[in-house]
Amino acid sequence: MTLSHVVRGVDHAAFPTFAPKETIHFYRDVLGFPVVHATCALGWGPAQHPDFIHFFFDIGQGDRLAFFYYFGVEPYRDGAVPELIARARHLALHVETEDDLLEYRRRLDASDWPCELQVRHETVESVYVTDPNGYLIEFARPLRAITREDDIDADLSVDALLAVADEERPSLERFYQIKAELIAERYAEEPARVSLV
Amino acid sequence: MTVLYVLDIDDFRPLAVAAAADPAVTVGRRGPYLEVSAAGPIAIDRAATGCRNAIWYSSVAAVRGGRIARWDRDGMLIEPVDSGE
Image 1 (tube, rainbow over the protein chains, first blue to last red):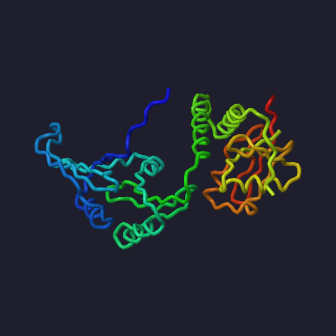
Image 2 (image 1 turned 90 degrees about the vertical axis):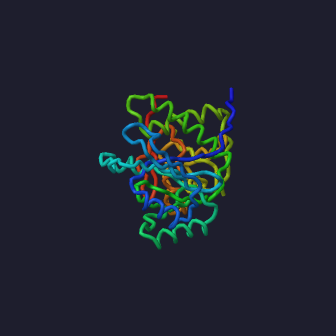
Image 3 (image 1 turned 120 degrees about the vertical axis):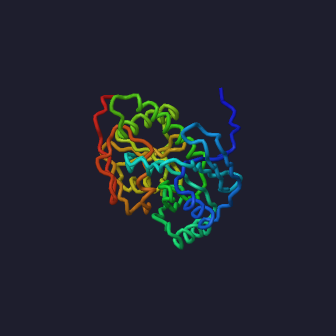
């Protein structure tokens, strides 16, 4: 049975901030993201942090990036989070064109938070910056369209990942083997020889 | 038999073309994949593919009957293994 797929993107992604001033400056004044909503709650939160402001920036298409600022709470930063984890957790914002990507890079480079890395990945080109809260933010523009072939391949990859994750010592080498078996199974007919000349 | 699968799209097709420079290599198609096969090893010269970094390092879809013995900035070598089949 295929489950109906009716979600429509991101309503909002929310993060705590202990630097509201820098956060507002970065998102509103440097990047130009409009402030679109703010909930100011006196005594609404739990006893440890009853007063907070939950403020939202428009990140396009009605999607929003939100922050919580809690009054009277000591700033906290988890120094124990390994770099690998800190960099893997990130928010990637979509832009359509190279010009748009470079425009955000230009805004960053003219600020106190310059672009840290610009890289052409497989299907997107990205610009990275760490925001005033230490969160990794990416801007990404498509390098090519995602095709039906990509989707089929992704399906087989996650099936192979499910299988290899059950093994005692998962490895990419085993993943490639399992995926090859899945490909041969799914397309069992003898392969037609092709000419690539 | 050493078998390498790459997705048959513009990004990854050059790997199959480069591998096929060796007459011992044959290329077939399975669904959306190119199936690159050889009785012995499969060697691919990175320069012959023209692949930029991210494409090169994401080019392998799957490998059967072999293991990737080398995959660096200059090339890829897939060596046959006894799969016990």
